[in-house]
Image (tube, rainbow, N blue to C red; front, top):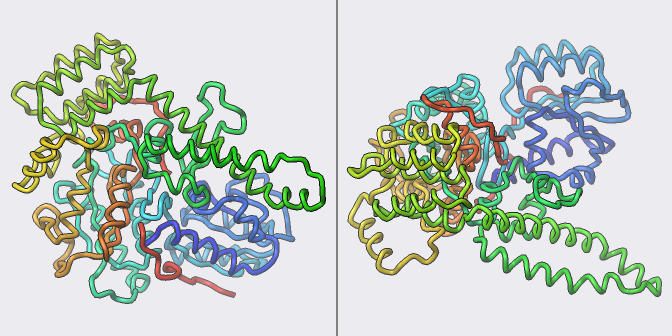
Length: 581
């Protein structure tokens, strides 16, 4: 179960099916992002695709020597653009691929518009989601709900994205959902309706143990997206923001022009692939090794070119050298900026108190530490509000709750009203009354013993004590202990065996910390393959935007920073031929 591989296979198949010759790839806004996550422009150029165009671009030239590969979401808008295109075709022949199920009436409209008979085929290829990591996908939806209810447009998009994911991985799953969430139940029902209606598409080879789709709600764990992160990928997203693998560095002091925007993709950046799950201290040492490797190779490349053999060797090694040079300058810049922000915002100290708020139960110590940091001028209003939000979520019903005093401290520090309002909003969003689970106290004797022993030993790393609630949920699910009264099955059937192929979807967004949890479970649990998805991939800023649909929510103008498994797909994902002439 590898979502990057699944989408990449679709794109490769589209290009192969169009045969030899020069091609244009015609996309919409969303499919442009879907393709860019799995293929670089240079990789696609090698497959004779020389032009990339948007279907909504008004000033495209007529180029009859090119074949057109159209990869589009099946929206009314895109169908209308295609009808206009086919009435006055700009290219010699059209291969049309929709990223999801297209209605028969839309296919009929396209056939009627194709008077010049330029359409070679129309197919459904279900790459209708953003493949972030092999085991992580996103739908890039920010703010999917209005209060406690789905926004109808976003419910439809989430249903399409999730059913496309299932089709691309060739899975027809049993479905479980979080009982405490009406939105989880609603999405589960919508996915089930599509599976029932399109039953022919979901007729895959039966496995001994059926796959399982588990639908959760972000409200059940509002803590995880609020914490500072210390592994490379998660830290970059938290402090700089990752948007479809792109990092905006334009605000970095003294940044050079060619590094204003960089791409971090594990698919074609070996250093990133090897370091994305390592902690910040290890990254620093690995960057140093990378630099030393580069320095060793550099002098050889710059020696005098005295013979034809020297020149030949230089030309052969130059692309590799240039690529390494780009990798070094990119990661040195990113790590340097992370380091600057950690120091400038006093994040080591802030993070230590965040971890205490998330993982320990010592109220007086936590309160004292939060109060101390609120007095520190280096702590930004954003980080100050975050600490108070974490306190409010943990100690909401504590007998000595001191939230009014902390709110006064925020006001005295000069924290703006938009951030202060978020404290009550986050409790409304994911407080004790809403949660179907108990985030903060160990549930059983084993957990209490573990916590006691952890306290005796001391913590190996104070900045990474926290484990997302998802870890416990998946651990119980894998062991067959996830309670059916909290996570019921949709419909009468239940799994008799422990699940092997698990797809988890979090309404309201997943996080890179949860993606790391899934990565580690895939690595350490033989026979179990897990894929995680969410309406978006959160950092603290986008999580704030996500909770603003609740009473008392203010408008925080932060750019939505969005994203942008160890198994393998059993061959090309599902696809559906509609017309082939």
